[in-house]
Length: 371
Image (cartoon, rainbow, N blue to C red; front, side, top):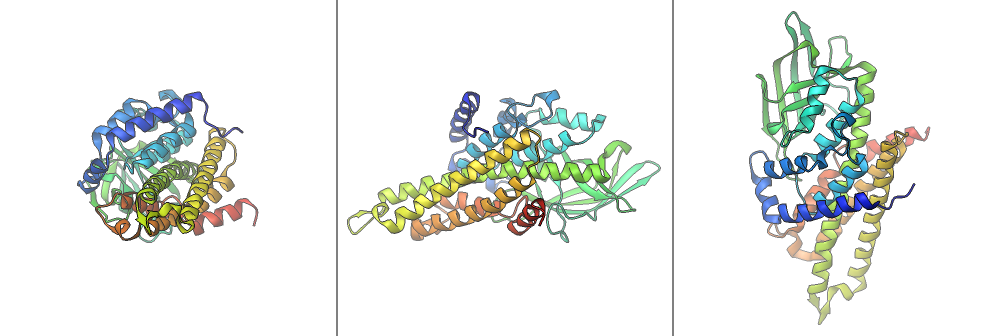
């Protein structure tokens, strides 16, 4: 396994970096974050038009470079603290649809993923749940006219602009199901959370939402397996995005260390500053390599639970530590909202809780090792 990027992936990286730096300035990121939907629609549409969002889509609509390519793009967007639906739409939702049996509903959603501007999100977490894998209590009931969905999901990304929401639910006999819901259907209401990361997460209420019989995209063991596969893919893409956040923190901190002077010299010349910066570089590179390894294994359809879980647990620790060190090395100015540092550190801290916290991922890694 060669974790160096090949020629095509290097070209993709260069193109994504140029696009991200031009389209996602700090001012643009702040403006999008403060908007009602927290969403840069034009930029997301352009990402889809360029084919970048389809790197991991089912092959019928162009699979691109797989998860490796998606990770390359995610890192470049993370470098500028861009908030896009890439992880949930192109990582989680596309991978989930790839893992289930083909039906007319699934085919429609797969085609929607290739439509510029379309967001497909997933509603997995509930107030009473531990994480995305907790068995759901949202209820799917069948009647003479079809199905109805009732319950509440929290921390749903981009719900206010989603064309479709993939929802984990349970039938009256406790069977787990994944259903596709029109994001604009009657009975679906959204309200935005206040979040540390600033990313657009919503509480979504399903109030007896009427659904057609073909709304179920997976049920039983098939639903559980598809969700596990999708969450692993999403965790990998989120790790790549977090590598970008760490690169953003390192870039700002190195720049500060070169220009901020104490005792007549740049503070970067002091070991107390230079050594933590070196550690930040080593740790970030380590997370990148672990992420690429996990993405490669998933692209090769090889077992990767241990690699994904252990990498995510390590990435959580690294992202939190680099965020703290970035502020500490900046000093007081780093704690100002007017400084760009907080755009990266808030997102890095939020990453630690998404798609598997440290305790949950360590448990999964231990289980994969037979412990």
